Image (cartoon, rainbow, N blue to C red):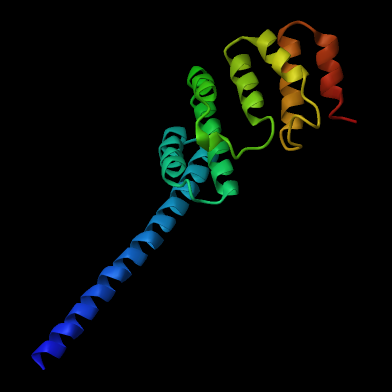
Length: 172
């Protein structure tokens, strides 16, 4: 009876340890999901520092998460940097091109670089980056934003005719 009891205890201990491993994996998934949700809500409500903290944790720990989640987190992280007006930091990050930026729509790097350049007063550089955008080089989601940004850069450069043409493309 004592030996059977010992075997039973060992089995129970083994099952408990195994269950803890499963719970830990589930806890990590839940934690990552919560970090993404927190980051999204924080960006939407203007709590950019909170957003960056949550999203950075998601991006560094969530390498096995679906590509769509990683892409959303990366875009939210860039928006948070922008919301904090950390445009030079945004440019440095884009220069580093961390792996977590790889799952993003076509043209995202280029758009955010142009946006940060515009916000740091480098409208000519920003416009040069944006002028080459077309349907092949940019996702359809980014294209309207890029064209509006190009129009804004043209306006800042004093090219009101081109700015007007670009802005009127949205009224058509």
